[in-house]
Image (cartoon, rainbow over all chains, first blue to last red; front, side):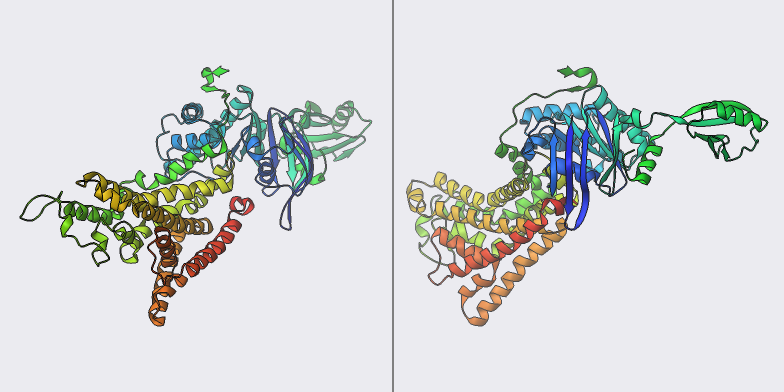
Length: 304
Length: 302
């Protein structure tokens, strides 16, 4: 278990940013998903000891609940969402300085800065001032800074913000590498579903400070037993929306979305199409996309 | 574990103690001005007064001789005791102290150094969102501010107390005998300590301005206005009331100078140490409370 939240509430004055969340974030790559203002960044800041929860308990790794913030930060790397940099410094100077502030000795910080900058692909540009970096390079230098002290857990807050498609793919591939090849636990806070699908093994969905879904991605997006995609021949054959044991909805690209109403079986679909004078060309179980999970969770406001 | 194939390896080490983590920040702040050629030019400009005094010292000790006559010490020709030329007499405390404390000579270099370094120290980090990067490391916001202050204080102290120390040591080593040392040892170390206190007070107030301001330029402008306007007000009040001591109750510069002169043991009897301390304390307290509010984690990071 990387992070455990028990009934955590975070307030900024009167505004409740996180409202009594209880969640378990496992090791591996986990997506912290939610719209802007859902409370993702607040949870990360509270875990880093920057914001104090007004109620609830939090535990990270095997550290005690009352662990000092710098004890936590020694084992956690944080890549902030905002485009921050240390003015006047080169990429190498910035990463090595932040390494020293994390407790590395000077020589170690230098060595680590070279290594992580090489890892993120900034080896050629490391002596250039960060203020002259492109957005993609700045994101990479922030990732290098989060890695410099070799943390066990990485909190990445919107790491693909402002990146073009190739930069985004590069960043996601780096995050995948960190999680799968280097064994880092990664908490990826984002509102971009594709990023989570590309990288994460599990997901925690937040909406307006509340937990609305959590679990392994594979389980949340598993195939459903009662929902199917149907293609028929002839393609323009019209089927009624309601048939005994079936609910049908025509899909924009052609074909139908079919929901079986218990105790109907897929045989009922064949019978209905045959009765309408057509034949079934394709009938396959539907896999829920993360978008379906996300929208479903937001709509229901409860656990998916 | 070494993972060179992936260009990454784990780091097993004992973390450095907290106070040592602040040293790179101190060094960064101290070196800010020296990272650009214009910064170096600005620093050298602030040393002009010290260079003039160095030339005066070399002339008086006979190292530089511009006129006819024998080469050697002219010490015997210099009258001792208070005089208008005391600032150019290495045997007097004013030589080390007054060029820094007098607004006419010391204000401009101090404004340049504090506006370029101290006032920008925290404000520029706020503008570039660097606070979030710093405070998610193993240092506290208090430690961060302290390190920023120490770094900029050391830079200002180098140009003020450091320059005076170099002048004094130069005098000790180029004097014909130890009489210079025996004469000046009574006041020179205290004068240098006074300059350190003076630099510490002004950089302390300035760093609080930096913590409050929303941008580096705004911090520099506010600090310059605070120092100059309060000096002008102090001068006007003192002239109007016909009491020089009143300036220390209105002018931050004068107040810090009065405290410094007391530390050096050369304050005039009528100087208002209490008023100076009250002014510095009140301004420091107000700025400190505002800075504390502005540097709350929640406010600084959101």
